[in-house]
Length: 120
Length: 298
Image (tube, rainbow over all chains, first blue to last red; front, side, top):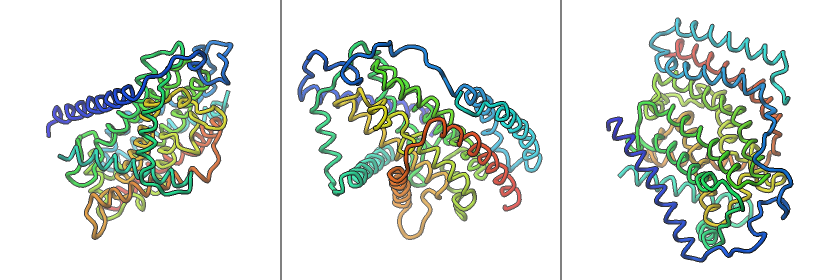
């Protein structure tokens, strides 16, 4: 199968799942509608609407982790191609990536020592 | 042809898993229970909360189901029994599963309810904890197979399965997979006892049915991924290849459910601390160990 065929197949799969869910929704609608009653559509908060708006700003208490996560996530973009050719390139690949990972790991240790790895 | 077979196998596994889940909660083994509760969900009212973000609210369960099936589409049940045997299979699994986060944040944001929103944002923190432990162990698997093609990865475990070759990777991957599928003890975004259902809270009727189907499909997909990456995929004596894949997948999925029943829910701060101070150093160690093994053991 060519790449284009594979992606078309996956796209067809997505459309198929969408169709299946549409059919389920249609079936549910045919079985009976939702009756409009006051108070029924209040979001789960013990029956009363919450005083404060829900779509507000929240404190991301994990921001220390999040900043380190960016570095590690970028690193993974390099790791996958490296992993595929690793055996072919041999020991040099291990040294190269070893140095890279060591620097990254030192960054993690530094962040840890500065208190980044805790709920802020 | 293989599309239909794989989808049927996926659906059958989900059904069996739902039966087992019902069995462990109610103590009765009823084979028709998942079907009946599915039909019952269709018959119930599907309530839309007031002032929702309608697009996010409607799209979240659909997206969750789509990404779970898409990730399963590149994982093989047998040498030829795979929907799309892509050159970037292992990477595609990661890419598809990253959208679980998007789906859960949409499910949290959409209904404009406080508990749902907290559940959604919580999962964002959970992603930062588990994400590295999904991608780093897969790197070790790709290093051994010299490929990201999932069938080649299974073939690379012909002699020795990865569970023996890199057991550390397997442990980290399973823990991260449970966190990704937000099963107990990592069910922070739904958190029955404290968030009243969290991202599940505002979904009723047919939408809840789709959401539940998606959650179970996600568990099966991750169990299949564990099988393909670590448990030798279709390899095994006597039985045909597809049977081994299904047996291993179901065994992993059921043990994930069972583990959740005996462990208390972990706090979000603890989860992140353990993942970053213990999990990531161990994952890096796993990569180094596998790197040495690949060069030393031919």
